[in-house]
Image 1: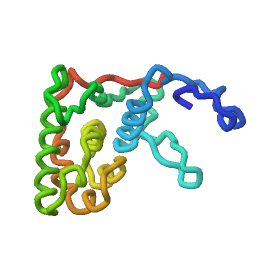
Image 2 (image 1 turned 120 degrees about the vertical axis):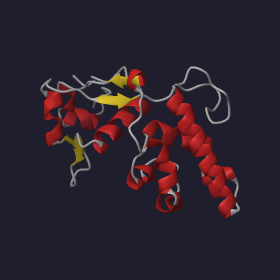
Image 3 (image 1 turned 135 degrees about the vertical axis):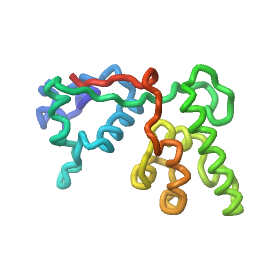
Image 4 (image 1 turned 60 degrees about the vertical axis):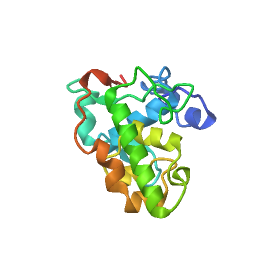
Length: 178
């Protein structure tokens, strides 16, 4: 709905007539999904149990009425090569530090498990973890590519880079649906 994709289901439900239809058409899918995950984690969105759809949580009404603002972290810019395996310039320092921390954790876990580092976490999954900035084992488990055994047994070390509020004020982008 936010992307403005006009499907039969959207049309039948009348969602294309809503004021928010297409409001995020200039935001990439990955960025929008990251923002939605952050809004869920911060308590601004809830999941409607029967339908699985998202609904506005009571906490979000200040934002919807213009009395508040939402600040969501951006996704690291995609380069031609993996951020994990190359020296990329122009990325925020916290992204580089979090990535290095996760790579080191992957290596320790692989050594403990007597396994290949890529069988533990591939580079794309490390990038997904950094972009999602999980603060709980549940948030970590929800990230595509994170094996269940890692979320269950190694969450503490994998969420450690995001455990304290990041000082990235200049690198956080304001996001509004309205």
